[in-house]
Length: 372
Image 1 (tube, rainbow, N blue to C red):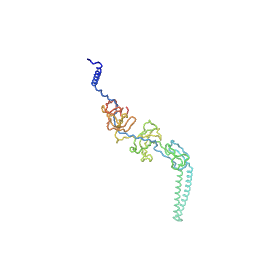
Image 2: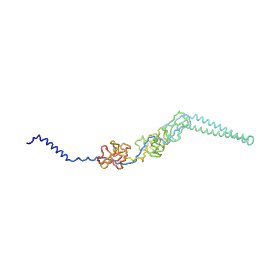
Image 3: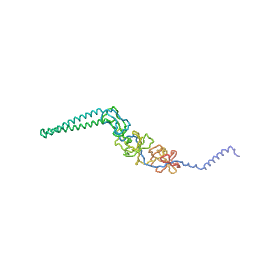
């Protein structure tokens, strides 16, 4: 007797399932994933260039605070801040009344001294004649001769006092010692000033320099004549101006504990470079004692939780190489990597998409320090 058709259905389903499994076992394993295309950058090393920058102002190499060589009240100021003056040009005047009186007193003193000197010289001449005739003693004649010499010296002193009084009257006018520009006013008309008190500041713009304050940690690498370059805030797009260190202060300032460094500007500096402008001096030098560094694209740097690293391409595989970050720029990173050698290739884009040992295929080699 044949079994009913309903009883055969489960048996047929089991046989069909077994056949599918056997067919699946006969299929081949899936192929490995294709190599991941990557961009790489070639590694090159160079000494670390240390760039140091300090900000300062443009000053004249030669500037001085000018004052009267006599005291008195200022009656007139003849120059303003920013005025260009020539050598010998009057800048200010004092009230000459007291100086004129001193001059007249010196003239009277000289006249009196000369009269006494003439009288004493005549007495000395008569005494010498009487002594030769034997009418006076030698002691008497010696006294007359000494008096004549004394009055002659007093007359010479009076003449010197008169010359000094004339000079002081001339000092009532303050004149520019050299060509220059008035950069500051330190006294005004109506003010009483002492002899030598500063009245204004005069700078000679023919020689200009950039004065900056250097910290004590940076002076070891500076020497007179060291080349540098300066950029100015008023001309952000202008090419840097070459400068050289002319003078480094031998002692630090008391308040800031910094050393004043004067960088001389070229003789043919641009005309727009005015006194008082703000500029930044940059001094670059190689640190030979430090390990060389490599500059790579910033996109090559990656961190998987164990510190900064890059992917080194070894044939068709990649390996993680730890690095030390020296500095970061807008598009590049300066690194130290003892495990890398010149000419090695590292993945320069998308390192976060890779895993250790992954197969890769180089499609483009870009410049190590650029995005190209």
